[in-house]
Image 1 (tube, rainbow, N blue to C red):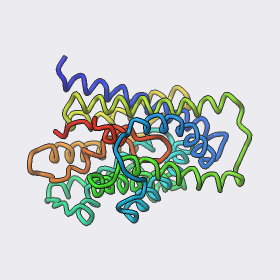
Image 2 (cartoon, rainbow, N blue to C red; image 1 turned 90 degrees about the vertical axis):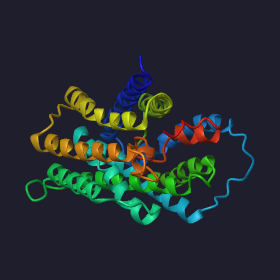
Image 3 (cartoon, rainbow, N blue to C red; image 1 turned 135 degrees about the horizontal axis):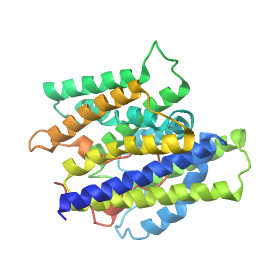
Image 4 (cartoon, rainbow, N blue to C red; image 1 turned 180 degrees about the vertical axis):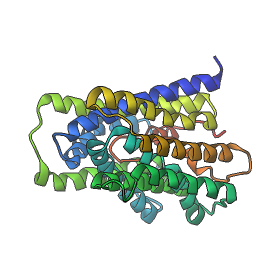
Length: 320
């Protein structure tokens, strides 16, 4: 088996696990507020994060070198976590994925003012085409837009912001700092809001939240393994396989069927995203490769980011 094929298989497996993670979130969303789900997700992720951070032998403090950029990343991650969990709880899985898939398009736009990226005409056209796909999915005027749709859009934008900030300060900021701050702030904010929405949870539901943390860890580890084996241009598009899992899980667990508009819009968004990934994979087309380095999932600040841990321990996947 070639390295690219091996990497692609690991990535496909990772996104299948992530989709299972999202199914659990959607099930729990029928019983609890996203605030409560985020709180316990972070709480149950701290032991894992602590064990992983013990392997970081780099000397230094946890005081950020770029506090304002880190504050922006942290705020975006906190908003993204709540909005993502809420969107999954109230919208069909495929619709949420289709909207979140617009995040690389937003990264491309944000890369201009933040990273000084030069976006040429063809990539601008790809971005505009992708946004048309988002409009097709949302169908403004012909369908009622809900808070769930707004939450999914905020998730896509928040994911783009966190990815761009990592590209902006990642070479100077300690990975441990970028990992801990979103988790700690998420925990504090959700703990303050929890009394307003708390509903007692049976042990079975707490176990499901433990499964959410475990799934996220295993999936992120598999993505790192994928990038260690295959080229980014091969691995990155594997995230779009989640549409397939959304179809299977949505029908099996929630009786959801992908409607024509969602299917067409998702196809347009995926096509534009693939074009941008392929353009950036060519030498000289992108100095910062913001889409490729954003890897996959949007940052929610609820679980430790394996890529940051790998960087902290000096085992970062090589740039390709």
